[in-house]
Image 1 (spheres, one colour):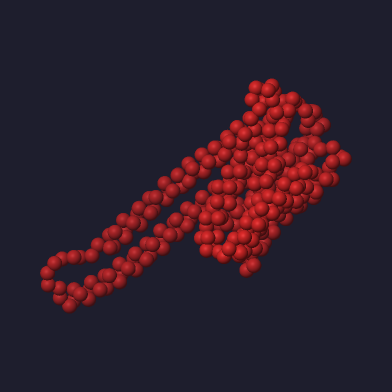
Image 2: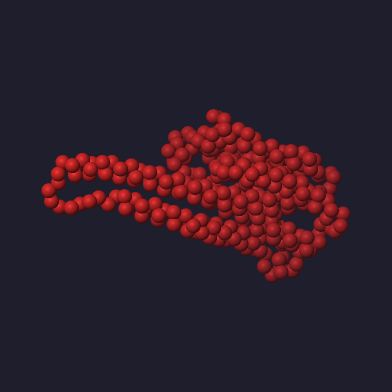
Length: 320
């Protein structure tokens, strides 16, 4: 458990340490490749390590009859519920976020409209009036530029807040998953423990790298949010491991309530990760100006990193 905790901590803290280095800025190829590698890891974890195992658990004869006889596709249903839940939360939080800032934008727009109103009286214009009008136009241009900058700042702040919401949703999905695999880790027999531990070390490290990279891009004003992310991510799997050990000593791993709960939570958490990974991370990254304006070789390098992340976690799925 200590080794897994250390790797989880290193996976999240290393991108934070190197974030101010010139070779690891957000616009560098290295940062993008590491981010997309971790994105591939999360996607593979959601499908291979969560949704598919959830289906196997729920359709086993050790769960309730409704899951393995009457309807065998509940894993997909619960995964879709996770996707819908994440989508609804994001849509409404984004709506209220933009609604709260809409007043500021309207205020700036009205101020700019007032400043743009120039006296347009028809008639003889003296040299003195021409002089004053020229000065007024310069002031208006300055006011418009200032207003545009302030509006851009508000929009940038709203974009960062939306990214922060995505970070919290991603953290919830990963934390649920980490607790569940921690429980499985704690309930594993001693003969299989070493192989599973090696797989989980890679799993936690690269998942932590991806999560940390997303938090860096969200530009949290307070470092407290990043510290909480590191602590929560580092501790969830060990806490799950302790819970697993306690459960192993208390009940059988074939208990109906335990297996059904594990299958449902795994499927829902998998749906959360699938939505966040594809919609909020991969799609946003590939539609960003930095990615669009990059060369074909730069894009290939990032996509190959993404596919390698999927492949690595697919191979680890043989053991974990």
